[in-house]
Length: 215
View: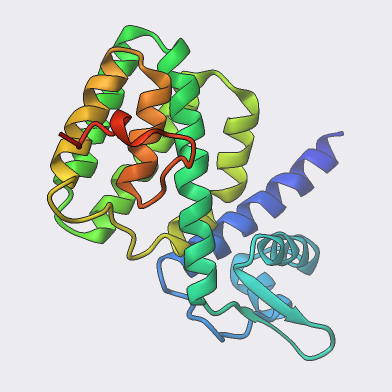
């Protein structure tokens, strides 16, 4: 059992090290990933490196062509678009659960993290803030599945959300203000709708006269 735990820890560590290097740009799209060289650099055997690369392939950070190459995957417009859609709806869902069941102090902290999003001066700061809010509401929700999903997608979220911002224009400030009020008043449905609207997604079943920015 101890041996298996140590082997699993080596894979986790290699996965995290390689993933972080891809996310922060030390490893660039197209860079070859040779398990022998990586194993030497990390001071471990090839087996955990290979398993780590397989995990990174499953989340789209690495691409493999059998007997040809293993390399850092390019970041496509489709990947960015799909990830923004996934993130908006997944974070909105976690927010909905947290608003319903979180402690009052957790909701105050949720509102504070929302303020960080609103005041973020750059897209990089915005992504950091929204992922901070995501991690907080997942914890506040007490939902184990949300927590596992966040752990499995953290790296690819951070990479593929690069460049993301909330909507711009005259509706931005009112939506942020409305969302803040909805969080603190435990309006779970309203908070979810406002969060999605801030990121360009609307609930098709939402009536126009329910729009907090109208009138």
